[in-house]
Image (cartoon, rainbow, N blue to C red; front, side):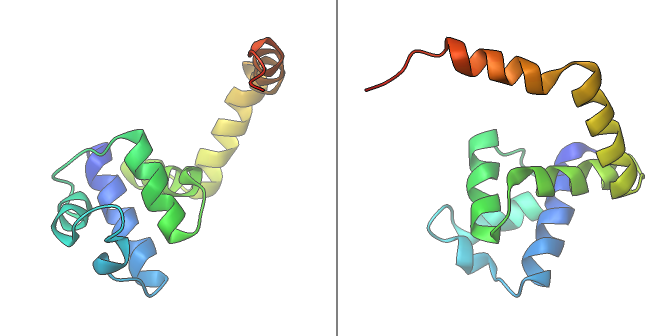
Length: 107
């Protein structure tokens, strides 16, 4: 399964599970656009996915973990276990802290 198809399938499932309609996303996009995403016809930008996740009331990572689990035919728990292992192996937490320190402060 392609990632865009998995994202669309999980998006539809989460939307329906929460009792939302495609029209509930009208502040972001047309119902037709949401429908094409749910059918896996388009690959949205990361910014658009983040906006969609906000309408669903969840962080984008929730949608993505579900999508990768479906795409790779793995449990959500296994996907999260692998992600945590990679975060630890690559020392992502430490790296993010250092990156924050380097960012110029906006006043």
